[in-house]
Length: 204
Image (cartoon, rainbow, N blue to C red):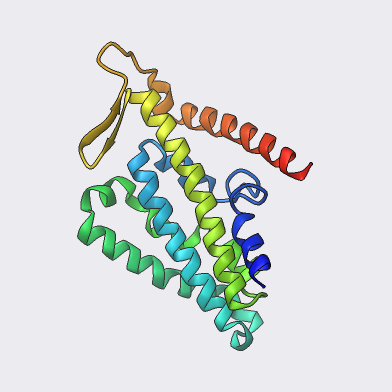
């Protein structure tokens, strides 16, 4: 049982990474990855919603009418998104203002709804929690890597809570393309090539 839960947990990191392999949830990832700080909050928010909704949906799967399962899934997901929205608005207003509409749109994020439909509605509670956590961690590490690379190369520094923690110095002239959408696609493509290389080595 432990081995099975572990396999469900780690698959989201590489072999079934939601962004790199399953190719879902890309819009928000490309949009919010201009700063590393943004990606941490977005990743944690999505992971909380993913794990919590997987847990509830797996718990009620036997009493959920098949004909209305999608609306029920959306209501469950929206409840947890509302919690995240209110917490960020109350305690991290600056981050909340930067993430903007992407927090409420977690409700229809393909990662959340996709795992609810494809996994949590068909599996046990512990497996669903492990799947949600694994997918969430896979989402976080890709999102953070994109945000770190784009912010560092695009601005020449990394800033957390208005404090510069890493800087190339004043002599560095950052290529601003990295904080624009072309830079998002470039970073995403290079990262995908790396993950695919790792996956092929793992499979061998």
